[in-house]
Length: 465
Image (cartoon, rainbow, N blue to C red):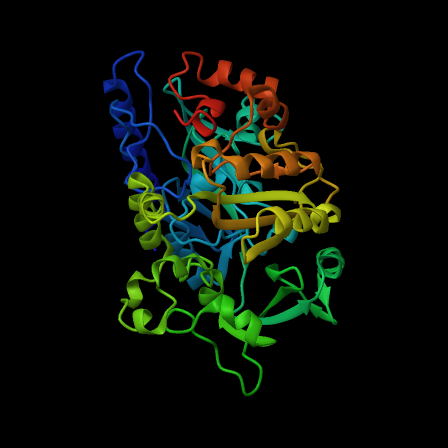
């Protein structure tokens, strides 16, 4: 491990170089990151202004005694997990795709199967260094005497519109080498929801501790909760499964009631097939998969293929030539209170029809805290529903209208829910600001980016500027 003093020295050098980059951008010009990759699924307008190169902000220093880590903002969770697992530690919440960065998960929103007990990634951040739109690097925390604690609590879900996280100090939790999985089938959304709610509250299932909890809905009458428990050894007679080659994890949910994975493979169980989205590229067909390099079975490879498709709208152009319906991309994650989940799924099966979908319970870790840009009722268990596909449209309907996505937004709002902003959004201004921070965001913007050198949140996520 690199000594902390050396790690800090490298970070100070990177900070100074970044400030020089900032100062070189003409006054009044917009500020943006010169990122080569992204996990966002909303279109963005082309920007000709120079960007800040933050690629070097990738590194981890683990303190096993305090169970904390210093992490540079562009560090991917893949690199972060590789650094922490040798110490028997991992982040409190590890989003399910390898190339999500810690800074991105905190300024956006991350979730995983530990979220019913650990919340979301920003809830385990102890302090951050943020480069603001005003060109200052500020160290912020949630400490009561921190004069900038408003930025600490307002930063999550700001999507780079208030600044960029350069360094974060986060909590870690102990791990065990393996995860024992039980896939439990339910025939109705109501019975699945009742079980999910009970397990999340008790953190037990059939007398065994529950460390991880998520679910997969294949149809209205076929849904599963996957209950995970960290263990020191696989059960007698069981060997760890491998879903990084010919095996496909989500199909195993329908085929097995018990399974075991190494903790490493469990954390990335969804990444190999991008949940189930790899099927769009034929990667789940045995004849194709056999020759697909194992190292290329990963989400960032599929994302690049999707980016090419979206740039040229290839599928809809082919569909139009062949007289087939054009399709609207419906790539979203939403959260609704657990007691509204069955109602949402009824709507979803009837009007959207994508399958499978992912469900993942989450609850705010510290009920005394407010995160104003993505505020939950801290006493309520919510459930994330993730769905990522396309929906056929009636003849003459333009996918750009967002007919299906607008309907989802409408229903989620009526159910007292929220929608993650990494993908397309169509809210009008008043509705958007009533959900995502409103006046408090405006105050933060005035304090930390008074010249508006960073695009504001509505412009970035709805107007796609």
